[in-house]
Image (cartoon, rainbow, N blue to C red; front, side, top):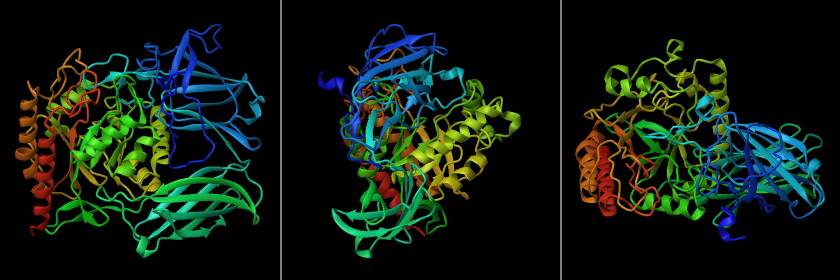
Length: 594
């Protein structure tokens, strides 16, 4: 096979690593049928983990609601003997059933979250067959789907389905570490590690080692909390206290193991963490500001859709992800708002390493959207409708009429926090965007406070603001910008979006954006004027976070700073850097003015 037939070979889960790892990415057989039964014949090959809708997959066909997407391949068990063999999926959109050698090993619902099956009992000694059957209702269902649609155009993009993140095997001990929760405490200078093992029975002891730059700085043994759970808290010495920030994104290495008795080791995993603290506090004039490690910080970032021209949700390579994130940082940004999507774990890992802060949207779902109301009418009448209540009376207009849909959102919210809580880059959760599937946002805030009390919450990005959370979150594309301080910290969480279809880079079917430039010089000039003449003066009025639309062009939407192929920065990069330096300088000046 060629190199392209082994895509994304890196270990997919940096925050819980083992030495045993075997990627199943590559060519699989596929078929799309009307039946859940194993197909009698296969249509050809598909390159996993690219969805069949993508060019990268080699298929280029859209899965329709009611159809079944079948995957098949053979595999050998990972090297070694004994223990258990786990089959991991980074994400499969939306619902799937998995068989190994004709035995059902499990099923899963939810297109953005990882899952694992213990397939030990279904394995043969050598030759094994894996079959995955997938359905995806896209807009015909109520599940989280983000910007996906079967009728793409404007700010909504092509649907994708099936396996879209790495699939891999690993051999583990019989009583392996099933979950690892790492909770740093910035003020106490500690980190608490909790591990849950796979099965009950017998005393399991936990040990943990923290290293800073390769030097062991803390090591301790924990005690059993329950039959399968253990916990240990380690103190970070003052001389090795290195807070995480965009300027200094220091990560501590963590090794965790379980033992029985004094000698026998059950499992060992590797992870990492950072010490950092989020809060909102008044500046010298009493204006609330976002604070990282008790210091006010201007959050200056971009809206990030996370789409790629060849792979839609799935990037072409790990190197492409790193290049994009590094360039964003070099341009002077420190924030990304991950919009209506959850990325593979390695994306967050690179943000952790580079010092890019992430505001994480919950992926929107619900019944089909009434865009005439939630987008067009509300935008036109935003001063009147921005604080419209999201109570039961509006559930029809906000696409959450069914109790089943609301219950599914609750499961999705919890799954998102559980999947991503370990990444220090995440500074804020965003439960709802512009009313898409919104309901009882105040309750969502309380749930997030319980699940993850150490991060900020932007209750309702854009409008249908219920007055809760930490952020007064505004979207502004059409009105004069007038902000003022309040009891929450002010964020301009979407604005800009100036379009320019750069010649030679994925010309769109239509040009979609919020005003169109005719040249690179005009785009640069309009970007500079917007930032320096409209946005910068609002820093004195309490503006503390900026999210410009957007990182890159996506399909028809050509309002990115990058082209869709990520080969060019559309405005003059030097001008972008200069603008960001001016914003930072003005913010620091405002902070010093009592």
